[in-house]
Structure formats: structure tokens, C-alpha cells
Amino acid sequence: MATAEERSRLRDVPIPAIGGVRWLLGLVVPALLVVVWHLLVTTGVFAAHQLPEPLRVVGTLYAMGVAGDLWGHVAITLQRVFFGVLLGVAVGTGLGTLTGLSGLASDLLDPLLQSLKNIPSLAWVPLFLLWFGIGEGAKVLLIAVGAFFPVYLNLSTGIGEVSEDLLEVAEVYDLGRVEALRTVVFPAALPSLLVGIRGGVGLAWMFVVAAELIAASQGIGFLLSDGRVLARPDVIVGSILLFAFLGNLSDLAVKGVQRRVVDW
Amino acid sequence: MADAPSEPTLSVRGLTKRYGDTVALADVDLAVRGGEFVAVVGPSGCGKSTLLRVLSGLEDRFEGRAAVDGDDVREGGSDAVGMVFQEPRLLPWTDVRGNVAVGLPADVDAADPDARARIDELIRIVGLGGFAERRPAELSGGMKQRVSLARGLAYDPSVLLLDEPFSALDRLTKHEQQDHLSDACAERGTTVVLVTHDVEEAAYLADRVVVLGDQPGRVETVVDVDADRPRERTDEDLLAVRARIVEALGV
Image 1 (spheres, chains in turn purple, red):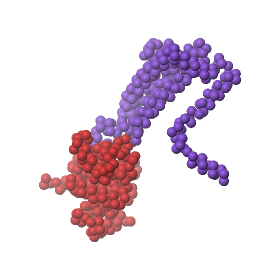
Image 2 (cartoon, each protein chain N blue to C red):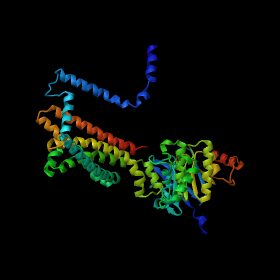
Image 3 (tube, rainbow over the protein chains, first blue to last red):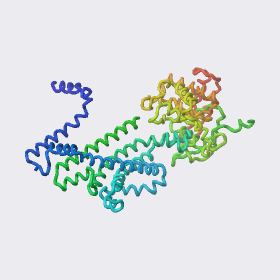
Image 4 (cartoon, rainbow over the protein chains, first blue to last red):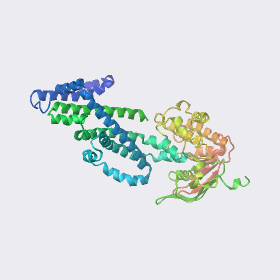
């Protein structure tokens, strides 16, 4: 009896009451992990030169922030990701639309693009260095390659999968090619495009690391490899956390746009 | 003009439509005069919807001839044809007004005040006055069906095809919408082909009722409805017509 009572009390209590702060629950486990991490280092399970304690990482980032050099790294990485995503999404949208709409274009291009997407990001790096040098252009292009594929793949399939029922409506009401694209096909494919952009932004962060690890004198990826060279685990872990933070932030931003745009 | 009666608005001759090995329609003949209201009834799977798909130009391949005002439906004849599908088929991302506007003829700008007024009038006629800004997801099945009907009326075609447009409506709304449809089509001289399961509806609305037989779909009987308009649903003549349709259906 007591258990049943307890259960009903549990159920009654309150999902709505904590609804507003429910997302905080997602922080509980990470917070615990940080505590465990701290304990593991302070009790000597991990040597401090391999894994610094959490506060030291925060301290290092803070010091770099105060000294000012952190912002340069963050800014240049953000800039690369931004332009890379812009380029990748633009080209992906263009080619995705083309192959989605035209069977001929799809037959010609899709097999090639499908196989190119399987090339790992790091594999491109030497070639891009050779072709485009170590300038910003090479990095932006590399990131664009990463952002391109999810956008292309999702949009191309999305356009191809627009409901036949709605296309027939467009046909019966003689909307005409352009009007049918505007009122039916593009809105119907918009959710796919946004899923693609979200994936593209995610991959852009992977590719920016590839680009910056190998050929950069600035950026969070450079910081990461610099940390290894200087044997500064605090810098390494700090850079990883920065990537995590910025990656999440950009994902949340795209998700926000997605929710606003795809609201039906 | 003198030979107008000899050339029907809608002309179907020897129409046979196969899907693979399945024969959906076999040697169907049908002539519908301008302004006539024809109902098509028949058992499920007898090809009623297929007939509408052919007439609306959605099927490229069939044998025989199907023409609207003398033009083959595969060669532009279907431009004059509007269709209200069995399912609402609304655009989920736009509101009722936007969905009805899809039906506007190509030369009408949806932003034009007259076009807007007409759309709102149609929305009101189908009984959705307060719902112009709702999205399909916020509407019930019957409401969506009425949006789809309004879209078909917005197209203002010379031939309107309707595939069970009232099937999801409650009895009262159904009667209301049947009257609206009948009035609107009579007023504009629209030629109508209505597919329905509802014998009462067919008798009440149509000038002629085409009864299709079991697979493969053939024209079983054509029942003329000689009742004066406006009609009463309880009209003796209509009851007799209903009996004849039911008999032809063999139920």
C-alpha cells in the first residue's frame, strides 16, 4: 500500500512545477563528472601533467581571456566556421536543389557527390594545403566541404520526396512550374534543408579542427596543438571545452531558427 | 452555338485504364453537357476516383478518348478542370487563406483586394469564417475537407470534379455544404462530376447519376433525376431515384 501511495505521490508531484527548470537536470551528470574529475586528479589517480584539475583549466582560460589572446583565437575560429558554413550551405543548397529537381542532374552528379562524402575530413587537408596554401581561403574551403554534404544530401532527398499528393494539387490547379516550386516544393523541402544545415554546422566544427590542427598560427585548433607542443594539458582540455561550448551554442542557434521556421 | 448540344463539355469514349494487370476502368463512355451535374456512384474500387484522375489530366496513359470542350485532357483540355481530392491535401505550412488561394486561377494575383475578398467569401461559404488564419494542423478532418472544397471553388473551373467532398462532414454540415455547392455551380454554370458513396447525396444533387459496376469498372446504368430544383430532400421523385440507384448497385 505504501508503495502505491508513494508512487501516486511521485506522479502527482510535479513535472509541471519543475517544468521551467527541467533543462537544468541535464547539467546534473556533467556536474558530477566534474567533481569526480577533480577528485581523481587531487587524489593522484591521474598525474597533473596528464590531466589538470578542473579549476586549473578554468583558471587558464580565464587568464588567457584577461590577457586578451584568447579572444583572437576564438574570433578567428568563429570567422572560419561562419564563412565556411556560409559557402558550404550556399553551394549545398544550389546543388541540392539542382539534383532534387532534375533527374538528369541527379544522375550525373549524385553518384560522384555520394562517394566524395565518404572521404574523411583529414584526408582533404594535404591536398587543400597544396592547392590553396595555408591561408584563410584553404581553411574556409575545407570547412565548406564539411558543411556542404549534409546540406546537399538532405535537401536533394527532401526535394525528391515532396509528397506526390501535393504535387498533384499543384498540377490540377495549374500553378505552373515556378509557382509550384515557390508554393509547394520549396516550403515542403525547407525542413530537410534545416536538418541539413544543422548537420552541416556540426561537421563544420569537425573540419575547423582538422584545418587548424595542421596549418594554423591562430584559432582554437591551433591552441589545441600548441597545448600539446608545450605540454600544457590545461590548454588542451580548455580548448576542447571551448569547442564543445561553441559547437553547442551554434547548434542551439540553428535549432532555434529551425523551430521558428518549421512551425507547422 | 447551334451545334453546342452535339459537342458535350465533357466527353469520354471507350476509356480503358489499367494499372499493371489491374483494369480500373473498362470501355467507359460518358458525355456531360455544359452546366450539367453528374454524380458517379459505385462500389469501392470500381474506378470512380480513377475516372476523375483521368479527367483532371493526372493520368497520362489510358486508352480511348477523354476531352473537355473538344480538347484531349492530355493536351491542355484539363486546364479547364478543377478537382477536389478525396483527401484534403492541404499545404501544412500555410493557413486556410493561403490554402484556398492555391486554387486561384494563374492570372489572378492573390494579393489583389478583389481576390482576397473572394477568398474570404469562399472561406465564409464553407463555414470557416473565423478560421482564415489557422493552419491545417489546427483543423478537424471535416474542416480540412471544407478548405479543400473552397480551394476547388476558388479555381472557378468550367468543369469541377469532386471526389467524395463531404465524406468527413457531420450530417447537418453536409446538407449545408451540398446546398452551397449546388447553388454555386448553378450560378456559375459549372459542369460537375461528383463521385460519392452516398446514394441520397447523388439523387439530391445530380441531374444524372452514373452507376459504375464492379471491377473492371463499367457503366452499369445511368439514372436520370427528373426532379425540379430547388429540391426537397424528401421529394417523392428523389426517393424513387434513390431506389433505382440502389437497385442498380445491387446492394
